[in-house]
Image 1 (cartoon, helix red, strand yellow):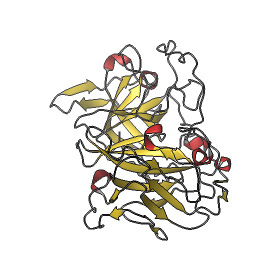
Image 2: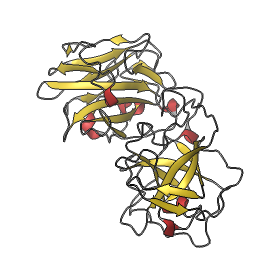
Image 3: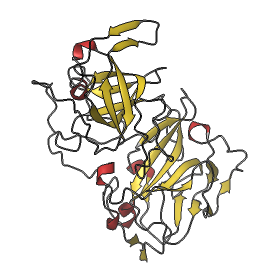
Image 4: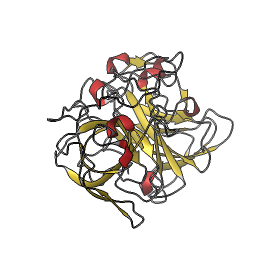
Length: 365
């Protein structure tokens, strides 16, 4: 959606994010969610049905998938305001929107829950119809925007109000149940930043602990990661382990492990490997049993993809795959070990054939 949002690195870790509070201009917004065969409840972030009484409700947005801030954007929030000016369509035409806004001084906060296939459009957001119609009539289709990243619990000084008769929405699917969210508002400690184990290189205090595995040299894998960054790549035979070893206690006050795997085009590579098994005999969990959270090409407009997973640590202590928790206190260790005894993240091949694997952006959050 935006070209430079001023977020602190590592972008998207949802903890300790800083904001410069400066408005940006030049963005444009469209809408979706009702009457157009698209739903806000099947987004790329895999949040499922969004209940209108959850934080921010149906005020959501989809990030342009060619924007440099698209990776890791799920769950983050932006403040949007309508801007009475002309807007381009990137095909040479311009649209007059100098009188489209209800109130240029009013704004709405939206949460990123989806991706927006935007072609070559860099500065763009697809928003839910409910957010759009607070700023302008839907007949305009596309409007210019001012925008800035904000905390998800931020309240604008002048909030854009719902219209008298908002567009109707979808009811929850039969049998649907509410799930815990990994949204910033639910973090126990918003000052604790994500701990990077590998991101464009091994973090300080972290080393390779792989066994029975051939690891490609870092020189050869320097551009094998997501968006052309470095990655750890290697051949993992049956029974082999690709592992990252840190220090005892690094899992304390952590809720999840995040990692990115090369999945190729069109299918998986390394499909039989496991998600990380924590050292000490914890319960492993298959990659294919967990829904990916992020998607990113290996280079702009590329078709060879890395997918990102977030696996919540209680899964390794026996919780079902795809479980989500907002409380780090739900993980106190596994495999007979306390959280202070664990120091390694492992990718094991318990399948039936040798696997070529590339791993990037391994983090604890």
